[in-house]
Structure formats: C-alpha cells, structure tokens
View (cartoon, rainbow, N blue to C red):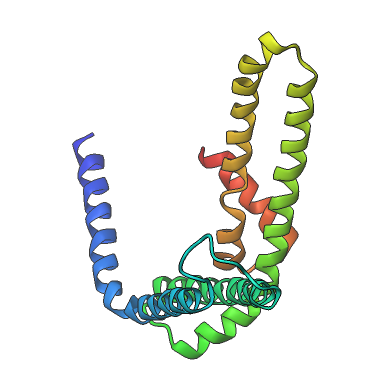
Length: 188
C-alpha cells in the first residue's frame, strides 16, 4: 500500500516537473493569444461607439457583423493551432511555429463541424426540454425545470471532450464526436 502511494506521488511530481520544463516553450503561444485578444479589444473600442446608447448607422452595424465573423474565424484558427502546438510540445518536447499555422488550417473546418454537431445536440435538447416543460401545468413546471436540468448537465459532460479529442487524436469530425462522447461517459 505504501509503495503504491509513493509511486503515485512520484508520478505526480514527475508530471509537474515536466509541465514546468515545457512552460517556457509554450510562451510563444501565450504571446500569440495575448496579442490577438488585445488587437480584438482595440478594434472593438475603435468601431463600437463609446456610449452604449449612441446611434448606430447601418454601415457601422454591418462592419461590426463582418468583424465579428472575421474574429470568430481567427479565434478558431488560433485555438486549433495553439491546441496542436501544445499537443506536439507535450508529445515530443518541442514544437515549431510553422506547425502552429499548418495545424490552424488543418483543424479549423473540423472544429466547425464538431461545434455544429454540438450546437445541434443542445438545440434539439433545449427544444425538447422547453416543449415538455411548456405543456405541464403551472405547479409542476418548477420541479420539471429542475429535473430537465440534470440531463442537460449530462449532455454537457458528454459533449465536453470532442473538440479536444479532434486535435489530440487527429480524427475526423464524426470520429471525434464519438470518441469524445465515449471519453466523457467513461471519465465522468
């Protein structure tokens, strides 16, 4: 018993030590993420009028929609590249910035596919839950809402991992969703 505890602490210490050794190598990604978020915030401050009540012209509203779509696309690209960069860093102990860009391109569309499936699952669940609660009598609605929340949490747990599995296992959209749901089910 004492040796298994000692092995567990040794393994945990080894993992922490490895993480501290890899952290300086991951700073490039931190700077990319920081630069991206600072840029997005500066652009937002320049485009969106300061007083929230200020009039918005149609041109400015259109610009905000275009910028939002652009920033979401860039965020997905950077997120996928950063996840793959960290994956490579953990697996090999080294990663280069060229692979960050290649992986951002490689995984972005798959990320959108996994996100679309996840959004569809939650939309269907939300519609069904709302429909069920809406047909119940008033006195039963509050307990029904509380009961409907539990499967929603279970659904959240099941769909928590597919995006990470997509990049860590280098799978397609459907395979990532299946393996991510299985991972969520087995670990929670």
